[in-house]
Structure formats: structure tokens, C-alpha cells
Image (cartoon, rainbow, N blue to C red; front, side, top):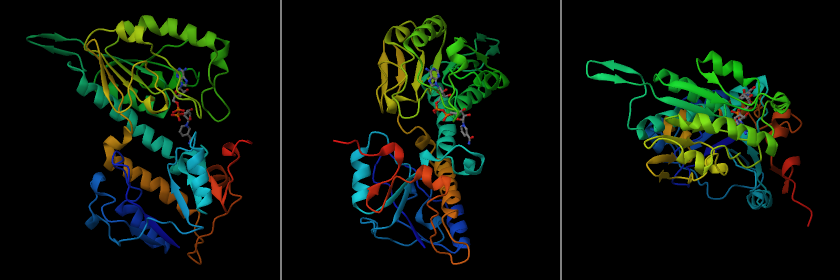
Length: 355
Ligand code: NAD
């Protein structure tokens, strides 16, 4: 079995899929691993850091090769077809089921955790004031008020980070299970807790898309709160759907000049009206930070965790005795992540639509 770690071709993507730590583990497993020169450079990993550096020709993947990556498969039918046509077996790491066995392979969590942390750091940088309350001889600086909207993995880490910096933190979500988690981090929970809210979590632990009525009630509740906030971090997502619009242009305008919003959902349509992917928008002195790939802004940590997620999955694809590739196509982890095989799109959620 041979593994090649490709250098990212998108210049805005600094992460790499292996670390010196996982290279060592792959070698111990008896697997050949080659790193394309320069692949780790943007994650603080020059070629010399990799013990087994070999140049590899990665431009053309051979038929039957496995390509394992963060694939962003939703709405990318043409790319899926291209991979199927090339005879590649493509696996999307972000479709890994959230079961105990697969926690160590969960790229959504490992990357969202860092994105949540970094969102607060970006907000602190863009905000012209201090986060903690400071009582000094020259006067008192009040603590910053931070509101986190959407409390999954990223939101929880954003709350924890903002609390560490001394902010007064509130948070909202549509899933009831979140309330206790928010409170355990020393933040206050704010939500429309009606009958729909009690049913808002799917069996998989994700949020459902809420009704128009619920969204209107939610907007009315949060509008008043938003006026009084210094920082808003939004992370709300619904798998496979556009991000819910939680902050309207009017709500943005109601905030004080100097306030900062960070929209972590910007790549999926945005939670904040006026957020622009890859940019910091200025709306009358209020900044809307719309950086994409926020985990990539902590590239070394993001790569290190991503490489470990990949190692843990790939380890399950290797026959420990023969050291050969041995994909068990009926394993639930494989079934959940495999997009293409033998020239076809095989994942049930991504079947080409009948013409
Ligand atoms: P996500 O990225 O899909 O969404 C972020 C948050 O936005 C979620 O908490 C969601 O409820 C919230 N949201 C959606 N619509 C909203 C709206 N209209 N208003 C406010 N908030 C809204 O979520 P995630 O970080 O992937 O976490 C989803 C769930 O998966 C959580 O229950 C988490 O604890 C769980 N999880 C389980 C595992 C595991 O078991 N291995 C690992 C990670 C996460």
C-alpha cells in the first residue's frame, strides 16, 4: 500500500494532510508514504520535518486509487462525476458518522474547534477595545459583551475562548441539549424555548431547519439583545442546507460603531446579511469579518489534528498482516464516507438526478 500526500493547489488552503507524527505511524504500520515537496510549508512543516520525503507524481491519480480528503460534496455533482469517471474511489472525511468509534476521525469537530477559537481571536483583533474588564487608576474599562449564535463544536469553543479573554458571554441555539453546555461554560443561554425547539434536534444530533414562524420569533428575541452586544460570532449550520440567516442588515445597523461580527457560516451563504466571503466588510463603522477557511488560519494546529483524523481512518483500511490495502466496503465508516467507486457515484445521498 502506498500513500501520497499532495500539496494543496488552492493558494488559500494552507493545511496539509500529514504530519511528522502521522508519517511515523504510517511507517510503523508498514505503509509507504510520500509527501509532495512543499506540501507542509504553510503549516510550518518544511520538507526536512518529514522523515520520509520523496517527490511524487501526483498530477494523475491511477484508476482504482483512493482519494481521501475534505471533499465538500454538497452541490458539487460535476466534481463527483469527474472523480467517478477517472475511476477514483473518493472518500469525504466530513461525512464520517458521529459515533464513538469514529470520534478520532471527526474532521468537522477537529477543524470547527479551531475555527471557533480563531473566530474570537479575529474578533478581538478587529475590536478597538479590550475584552476583559479592567479597573485601573485611569478609569474602568467594561468587559466586552460577546453573543455566540449557533453552539455546536465551533460555538462551544468560541464561548470558552471569549470567557478566557474575560468577556461577558451569551449564546443561542435551536437545540435544547445546548443550554446546559452553554451554562457549564459560564455563559448565559437565550432562545425561544417553544414546542418546536424541543423537537429541533435530529437523531444524529444536528439541527433541523426551523419553520418561518420559529425564525420570526427567534429574530424578535435576538434583535433586542444584538443591539447591546459588542461582538457577535455566528456558527449556525444545517447539514446540506444553506446557513440560516440570523442577523439581518437592520440588526447589524442597530449595533454600536466599533462592534464586530464574525460569520463562520459565510461559505455556506452566511448567517449575517452583508457578510462577504474572504473579506472584512465595514458597515457604518461596524465590521463583518467573513474570512473563509478559518481553521486554516491556525494552520499548524489544524494540519496536526487533520493528519491524525486521516491516520485513524486509513489505519482501518490496512490489513495488519499483509500491510496491503483492504477496504471493507460494508463497514459503516466506509459506507458513510465513500462517494465514488468503479466509475460510479455510490453514495446514496449524492446520486445523479434522473434527467
Ligand atoms: P453544525 O456545525 O452543524 O451547526 C452549528 C450549530 O448551529 C449547531 O449547534 C446547530 O444546532 C446550530 N443551529 C442551526 N440552526 C440554527 C438556528 N436557526 N439558530 C441557532 N442555531 C442554529 O454543528 P456541529 O458543531 O457539527 O455539532 C452538531 C452536533 O453534533 C452537536 O450535538 C454536537 O455535540 C454533536 N457532535 C457529536 C460528535 C460525536 O459524537 N462524535 C462530535 C462532534 C459533534
